[in-house]
Structure formats: C-alpha cells, structure tokens
Image (cartoon, rainbow, N blue to C red):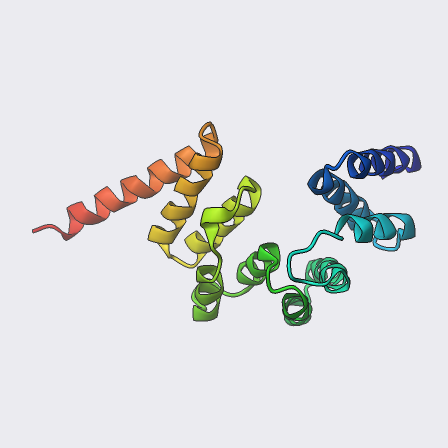
Length: 186
C-alpha cells in the first residue's frame, strides 16, 4: 500500500472511531496491519478500537489478533504446524474469536474430527458477517459435513437474502441430496 493510501485509510479509521463506528474502524486498521504489521499508529488505534468489553481483556484481544496475523504469515511460508500453534495460542487468549476457530479448521485436514468439533463449537445463529459464515460453510464442505454446511448457507441467506453465491451453493447441496436419495432408493 502506498504511503498516500495508507494515510487516507488511517484517517478514515480515526473518523470511524470518533463517530462510533468501531467495527468499521477495526476492519480498516486490520487491513493496514495486514500490509504492515509494524505500523505503531495503526496498532495504537486498533487497541483503542478494541476497548469494547466482551469478557476478554483488551490486551488479550490485541495479542490474539497479532498472533493470528503472525500465523497467517507463517502459513503463507508453508509452516503449517507453527501456524496452528500460533492460532491455538491466539484462541487461548480470546476464545470468543470465531475467525480464529475458522482459521484453525481451514488448516486442519478435511477428515480430522478435531476440525468438525471446532466448527460445531461455533454458534452461527448470532453471526452477521457473511464472509465469515461463508468460510464456515466451506470448512464444513471440506469436512464433508453437508447438513451443517446447508445450515450455515441458510443462515447467510437470512442475513443477506440476495447472496447469489450462497444461493447457488445451497441449490447444489440440495441437488446432491436428491441424487443421493435416488441412488439409495430400491
């Protein structure tokens, strides 16, 4: 990201914080930190943005986020085991962070029962973020848990009824069900 764009995004995040749009500010700051994890001003603002209380201390939220960033970087260099260790540490610091759980399940093999257990620990009924819900649905698909994938896709369509990608995925899964019943029936 060029310095001018960086400055604009940082300004937008400050404005978002001042106007009470914490979620938007957090998203902007996270995008900045993904580009440059050492950006002190973005780190300080993110710390401020994460001051809302969810039962997890601000320090733990922040440490958890930076561990997740580091895990993503380590994973991109092919160090899967180390990435899982970092994500596990992040989850211990912030057990309410669903995106960490999803990241772990995305790394685990498709037939790993641990992945399914982690996925099942997520209460999708209260998630509004459709991108996160799509990642959860894909993780269920990779784990061959089609009924749960359909449940998550239906949740996406409740949150965002016009989501064509989710509509298509759900129709495909329902078509698979029909085919499966046809082949099983005598």
